[in-house]
Amino acid sequence: MAEDGHLKTRPTLDDIPDEELNRLKERGFDWIYLLGIWQTGEESRKVSLYNQNLRKEYERILPGFEDSDICGSCFAIKEYRVNEELGGNVSLGKFRSRLHDRHMRLILDFVPNHTALDHPWIQEHPEYYVKGTETDYEKDRTKYKKYLEGKDPIFIAHGRSQYDPSWPDTFQLDYSQQSLINAMIGELSKVADLCDGVRCDMAMLVLPDVFLKTWGIEAKPFWQKAIEDVHKAHPNFTFMAEVYWDMEWRLLELGFNYAYDKRLYDRLLSKSPRDVRDHLRADLGYQKKMVRFLENHDESRAADIFSSVFFHQAAAILTFFSPGLRFFHDGQLKGQKKKISVHLCRRPKETSDIVLWYFYIRLLNCIRDHIAFRHGVWNLLECSPSRDGDRTWENFIAFTWKEIEGNLFLVAVNYAEAQGQCCIRLPFKDLKEGKYKVEEILSDTYKIILSGDDLVSPGLCLDLPPWGYHILEIEKRTENPRFVEL
View (spheres, one colour):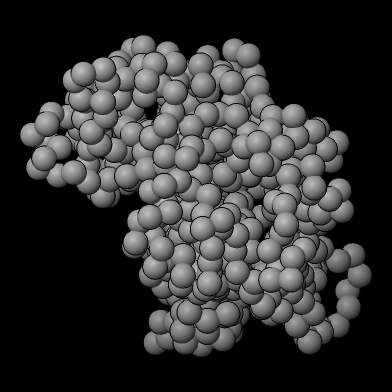
């Protein structure tokens, strides 16, 4: 290390210690997603270097930053080859083997919508890109870049979505060109040789109807054929779609294994228990394919935007104990608050939030240690008033996880800023006989013995503080002890 805390040389994938991988495995992680490992280009980096709005953002995130801290956007990809500064494809292969030794798998990015400004296709296959006219260019130079091909210039469109400004460090691919589609399937196949799954950036942008709305161009279908071709060579390869605008089901129908659940995130952030509960009424087969997250590289840090640690914890309980793929972001467990720009390759030092760190470690241990939360049967429950005239029960969200041959687990959250009470009936007829120990498994704050009849009707009655929660294990007892409450 240099005196200012900068690394003299940047670490490669080979420098990730085995102890770190062991720690991730010990905490129960099955997948490692590496963001930003592909080879980027100097032309796109220049945009990141000289854009004044971006530089203001860098200064806010990383006061006193240097140009060497600016790598360029990891989504302006020049080539699907591991960046040489990270050790290249050879280092990635060794890293993947180390993950496999620990029964973990590797997921990488695939960006279908655009390339870097200096991608080889710009010279070799300019027909792969969306183009405008000189009039389009003069009308709005933020949307097109003048590119000289021989004597006659062409005007290539920068990548964008129909709702966002152009991304000036990228060029937009043209999905009306079958040759481009074939080439992109080839690129995706190369990526599939290097990892176990891909997170497909803004996957909905290349759907024909979305492409038409954005560019006025009739595009050809891409995803179904691309996924089928990859699966011929890699039958167990996993596809995750970053997708918005309520298009999750469409991507799943085309063959994706998982899709981002931004809708749940938005409803949690809006503090609407009814909307969260309604969202969880979706078909269970659909929910199992949702990617549940509380933050990612696009969203604000959860510790920053969820305004209190109690609000944060309640949202995390509902996110990570719901069915689906549980997706955690680097720094989230420690309660880091600064969202890092994808144009930077260094982040600031932040003090860990010990309360959140302890909470997340307990949460991960709970999911790891109880097979029900991974492979059990999930069931959303209905809550009811604990007394006449009290409507705080409407703020509760409750569900169970049940082992096939084993114990029952109840998750209940008072998703509100006020104290609340409710009763929760457990709809399992086989509970009626015997006594049951009901015990909090994230702490030792709650333990009670109830009869099966009481669990079924009137049910388990709870009184929780604002944003309070229980993760309760309900275990049948053979003896008949006296009632105990701690």
